[in-house]
Length: 125
Image (cartoon, rainbow, N blue to C red; front, side):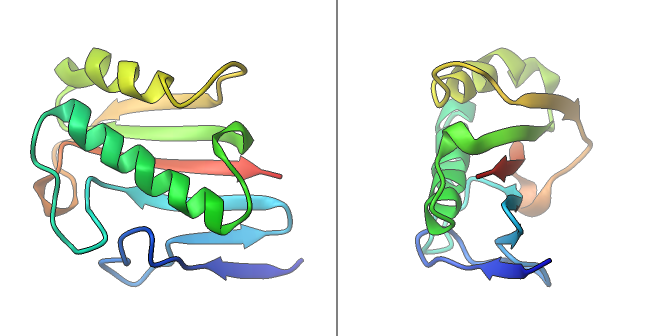
């Protein structure tokens, strides 16, 4: 099986020893994305604004692999406060027309750079 590292300047650079995404065969594994802009600044406004930035970053990784949101089959959402679930869910849902991916949402004690939401995805072409 061929493994290809996906790297784009349209999404934030990794902040550790990992790839933005890895394409293995027809399956894309995207590392968890946070509300980080490409210039390294964090979106620290509302949880909705943070989630939009996260989903934008995911969209750029999908584009780099010639995919879009419709190719996502699985998402993992990590929140520091489950009280934000409804707001995150509303933004998240706006990126899908139908046939939603499988998903889990969990509350965690902390996330990188002190953010409130992180989302990772698996997509298949």
